[in-house]
Image (tube, rainbow, N blue to C red; front, side, top):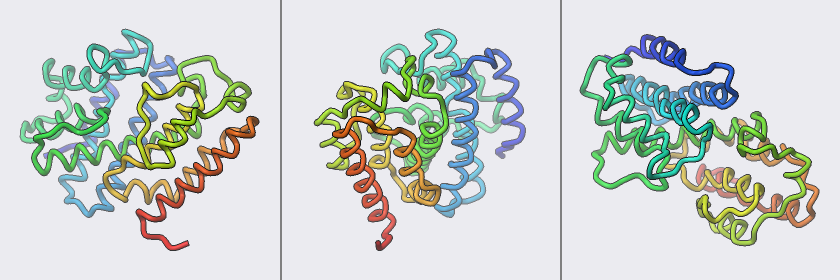
Length: 263
């Protein structure tokens, strides 16, 4: 049995170990609940059972639990995939330190929870997952991306980019040609290929190319998140402004195509 109310209560108790005034912690707490909401919406849209809906919400609640340790140790959101990785911290905290039993007593879901959290920030999901493990690994990845569009619209740029950059600086930056071409070819943009903060901005919008289910894309479309994120910046560089309009149009056409919406 999955008791989400109890799990949420335990999550709030766990957070007392960390600085509630830290801006990065605040962002991730709000993000966690945004992902819970998105997970529930996606799971319901997929017409999953109540058990799997509850399980998706529990995974969402715990998916970034490793962030708080990462922030405490390094004061960063940047994952080094070898030794500073919030997904790895998360599964270690939950399963090596046995914290998972505070959130759910039943052990039958452990493998699903472990593999969903472990894979949620990877470039690709690892091979060898069974059908239900793969379902929840895909679902949490989509839900995480979905709330990240809200994050990019409303959170401070300093928190998003982890630098003191302002909108006045960002709006004058250029988009690298390789980043623009990758986007227009429906490619997810790799961290190491980005050169400017505007490249990073485009890479966030490129999350749309990595959705497993149309359910999350429906949420983005219904809430007009592509336009809301793009419109946040007043692009002063003319080349950037032109590229962003092409990116906007391409993104909307891509989503409408996947949702089979006729213009």
